[in-house]
Length: 361
Ligand SMILES: Cc1cc2nc3c(=O)[nH]c(=O)nc-3n(C[C@H](O)[C@H](O)[C@H](O)COP(=O)(O)O)c2cc1C
Ligand code: SF4
Ligand code: SF4
Image 1 (cartoon, protein in one colour):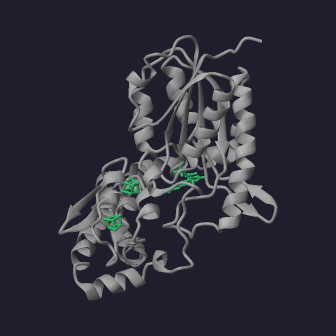
Image 2: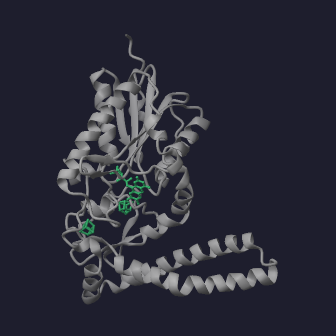
Image 3: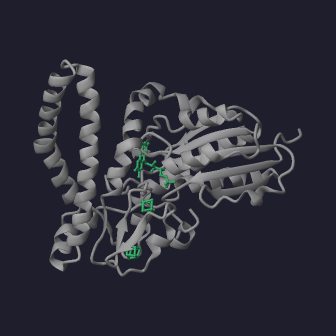
């Protein structure tokens, strides 16, 4: 039987290597069938690299899931992608899987595949497949990385499944089942995806700090795909453009990057106990006076005010923290009140990928 495709192009977004590894598995499968292949991270993709593609091309986009959605810069890449118009496309995401005993548990995609699929469909591409892969979670500012044995068995398990998926799509078959199994839950969390996209990701960007072990080696600044770390007062400073891909935190050779848990705790406490009740009372009296006490008006105004104030508070709190951390005593207090500093709080990156390779993520 003649091969359906002559070429395979896979573009990925990967912080800690999961989505890159899945892309490699798919590309390898295509290579064993003799297809011409190209694989690149979204921020390093050069259209000239596929100038010699002739015949039919299958295009794949594989990305980490962030806040039940595809990360912002990958979405922006898709909006701008106009090559190989009309091609067959597959959309995939890696998400936070778990393993309980012998049971492999899935993460939750939300709109991380449906939304990009819609974008590409509207742009004239043919959506052939959508596929999630449940590799270990890398969100280690929230929880410790999984144990090595668990990670290895998950990677082994999903390598087999991904190769099966690759084989099917390269045969020209459509694969959608796994992407729709959790549809009711995906739809349920869709509003959170919007909340994360418009507010959450900016707050998370303001939770990273470099502790006293940082030796200014510059690796995190060099390798951040969104160029979100700058030197301020001779120490790394995280800008709002950080997408919390977790690359810097997991690859820092000094293990110096922490999540500022104590600052987050203090700011959330201030917001919930003092600031939000105050704002709520002010918005209530404004709506009562000017807008006939409308419930919808209250909810809309309060939503905007509450989150704008939260963002401003995190920005100011982070600036202040960054300044205070120049004092060794305060630096130590902030470091030791971060959970990520303790040995039991493991870092995570896909096995068998060193720091130099991470540079190509
Ligand atoms: C900020 C952030 C948000 C995340 N949100 C989700 C999510 O909504 N659903 C999910 O299943 N996994 C979520 N994860 C887990 C990652 O998507 C998952 O570990 C992914 O495989 C990481 O891929 P990478 O190594 O290619 O970056 C999140 C991770 C981070 C850091
Ligand atoms: S990689 Fe680590 S040690 Fe190097 S500059 Fe960044 S935080 Fe500091
Ligand atoms: S600053 Fe770190 S977590 Fe943020 S986008 Fe860059 S590498 Fe990823």
